[in-house]
Image (cartoon, rainbow over all chains, first blue to last red; front, top):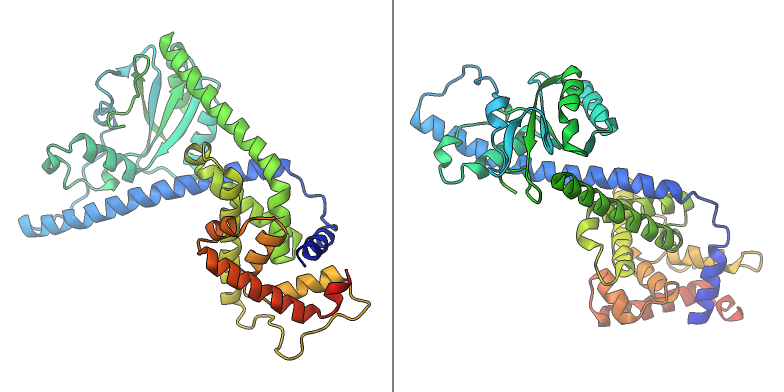
Length: 202
Length: 178
């Protein structure tokens, strides 16, 4: 019986069409990256949502609700939230950089910037950091003094692309190119000694 | 310069992972696609299911690449993709093409037996189909099937026997002929 089944199954797949294998790898990489990003976003958004709800509750109890516009984002100050072993902002040479996006960034601008960075020969890796992820980082950095960050909501923080450079001496030129992209607010170089990560919280 | 070396090492590592993944896809794809086809009887859907499987594996590649048995892992991901697809499909279409009891659609002599087998297989519950395909097409042990489907060994044995009995009754005498 087992043998029969095996033979029948063999015959059943005999009409297998020629489907390209090459596309499978590319498609899987693209879709897999999408899955990974979505998962990271879900986690970050979930954390941010809980924090936001808690913050709103605290504000309502402690002070009359403020409906005024949120304070403007301050990328330059935020840029200093990097590993203390690294130097930031770095002007001439940098191993990493944070490309901060304008608060009113459109999806199209963001896509163009991402594409520009991906295609740039000086750029190694490009990782998008959402407002929620930025807040999460901030919370980790100020874990000891949570009252400083309790009332910050994601919309007050800028989105950014965290990039690594192939060669650190190319930073000045890259910064010039990146600044010209529409929707880029600021680019901050981060110069790290070998073996350290630019992030303050990883 | 040390920093540049560090960056280069990281890029090399990524390239190595990418190459590993590509090699895995190339060796595993034909098998997964055929298994998927036997489960869904549609080559294009089988290709989609295979792609879903690889996408899910790529999303976790850094973690799973050193897993002892990537093949077993891929079978598990594929079967879950098949079950998901089946669930969505049955939710969308209220009436399933279930063969009516009592009229087991015996194949006449003009029907190719392997087509009759696939039709009979389609009449089984989806998890029974998975057991039959894994056991008798992928040649997996009862233990391996149990771990792929997250059920006990005795469940696999029982449902496999039940499925084979059902197939036999659907295919009738022709089954012995081959």
